[in-house]
Structure formats: C-alpha cells, structure tokens
Image (cartoon, rainbow, N blue to C red; front, side, top):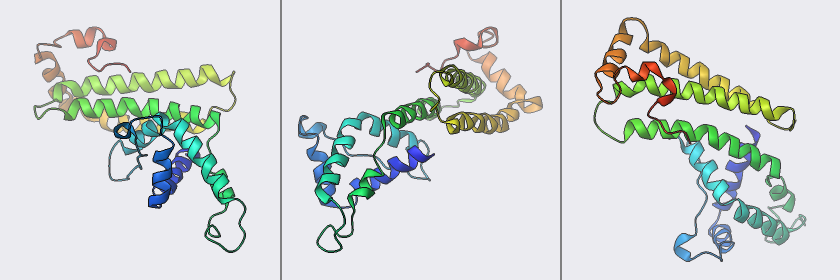
Length: 217
C-alpha cells in the first residue's frame, strides 16, 4: 500500500541520523521529556508490527507533519554542493501525507487493530486456548464483513477510499478461510467439544455468535 510505504519511508528518514531524531523529538516540546515518543518501524518478521507503526504514527501525526515542514525548509533546493547537497527538499515533500492519506491510514490501523487484539487474547496466557479458536475466526470474519460494508457506504460520498483496503479485507478472508477449514470435519469435533465443555461458553456460543468473547474495538 502506497500510504504504508510512505509512512515507512518517513520513519526511516527520522531515524536516519541522530540530528534528525533530535529535531523530531524537539517538535514535541509541549510534552514532558518522558512523554515524548519516537516513531516505530515495522519489521517483516514481527507480527503486528505494521499495526504498531501505523498506530504510533497516528498518535504523532501533528509532530510528523511539523517535522516534515521544518526539514523541507531546512534543506531548500539542491545546490550541488554544501552539507545539504545530498538531500533535496523535494525528497521530503514527497513523503508528506495528505489529510485523505492520513484518513486511509486510520482505516488500515482499524483493520489491523482487531487482528492484534485477537493475537493478544490468545497469547496472553500459557493455558490451552482451543475453546476460543472457533469464536476468534467467526469474530474476525464478522469484522472484515463490517469493514467492507463501511467502505462501501462511504464509497459514494468519498471516491478516494482506496480500493486496496477492500482488497486487503478480501485477502484477509482468504487467509482465514484456509485456517478456518481446519476446524471442520473430524478435527472440528475437538473445537466444538472444547467450546461446549468450557463453563463460560457451553451452548451459548452457538446460539449467538455476536456475543463472542472478543471485545469490539
């Protein structure tokens, strides 16, 4: 996704040198030193790191925008020599996110937040979580359907909603279907029995799927 790539490039630019990093922290002069934050860069080998990057950037949106404006002014046009010869102000102008792109980023973060929440729910304890698996899949399927409906509702009003987000939701469904199929047929009895034997679930899980344990964010 283009907006995600832009955001990753911004994070790399901020962390590229101690001077840039310090100038970024300086934009947060209205906050106590201990509350000032840096950006988070996503890592391919870390689950949910893209969500962490997006969520932190949204929290720091005003400071990121201010930092880019100041970096653009600091550099100016490329002159061919001098300390800023290797960095053109246009390089930073291309990184700036529009209000619409920040809005798109919030949609992406909303989608990824639900998956991180599900991950945390299943990994916060060392006890067996098999009784929650079936509920988790249904919860995520419902959420992706809801996200798609919301995108469709806004499509007529805002033609700039990115089609890539809708495609991402569908790819999420495809991945979930692959693993959800493992809860069917003979292996499905394990998940069904675990759910029914759970005193907090029993048959209520089958009566009303929307009453699943995962909190809607």
